[in-house]
Length: 123
Image (cartoon, rainbow, N blue to C red):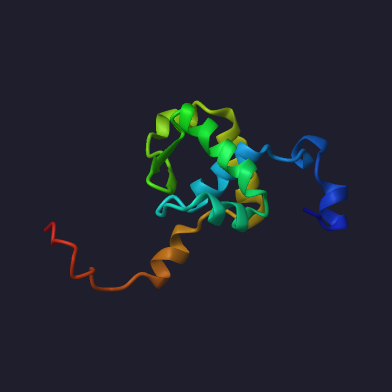
């Protein structure tokens, strides 16, 4: 993946190091934590070989960082487990740098004024 000249000049060497395949896969799943994907879909989205992604997913599953059901993969909801994985922190930081951090006010701005009909009224 290429970067622009300005990023090249202003970014430290450590920040420019390429993320490992497992870190890229985990970062993608973290950014899409409300969905589950097939390995081929993940590979297509992050621009990597499906075999490399499948291997990474298996390794991440061995570390209990992702969940697997049938042909689908999703990031674990065990935040303590994720916090203990140093690659997750680095991947999250790089994704935030590239895509910007989540802005809660922006979400609120576009949120519906009425709750979804499937949501029970908690009041």
